[in-house]
Each structure stands twice: as structure tokens, then as C-alpha cells.
Length: 106
Image 1 (cartoon, helix red, strand yellow):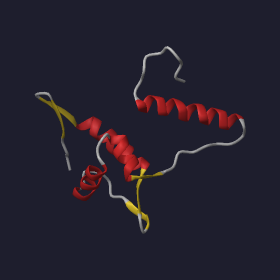
Image 2 (tube, helix red, strand yellow):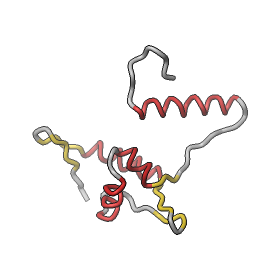
Image 3 (cartoon, one colour):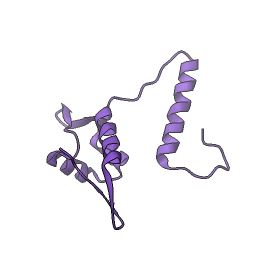
């Protein structure tokens, strides 16, 4: 849990700590909170640190997993597929003169 006086961590670290605390509190009350398996493109953009238009473009070009339509105006991604993409990207990173370029070994 984030405590006062500790150095500021990333937003992801804080969110993880909050989720853990909520799960522990809910579990002690007999209620188990779950994180949604499906996330909207805006959340994907936030996780990846890019714009929503980049998420759409990467999906169309095959860089990201394909989303699905949950309704007429609701496009969703499977959280596990996005997390798998991030894990694969970490494994494939290559350093080129100050820029990290992801290689695709299809």
C-alpha cells in the first residue's frame, strides 16, 4: 500500500496497490471483487501510454490483438490478450541508438 512520505511511484504501481487493498478488504467481508476481463479502447490506450487513435490503427494493422463489438457503440479488448502483447513486446525489444524498436518474428 502507498504510505505518506514514500517516494511517488508510477500510476500503475498505485493502481495495483489500490486493487490489492480492495481485494483484501472485500475478501475479509466475504465479497470477492474481480477485474473485468474486457476493457475499452480508451483503457488500452491508457495502459500502453498511447492515444486511442493509435490503438485503433495498431489493431487495424495487426500490431495489437483484434477487438470485438460488445454493442453498436462499444468496442472491447480482452485484457489477457493486451497483457500477452505487452509480455511479448518486452521479450522482443531491441535497442537501436537511443530508440527501442519492437521486432516481430512472425
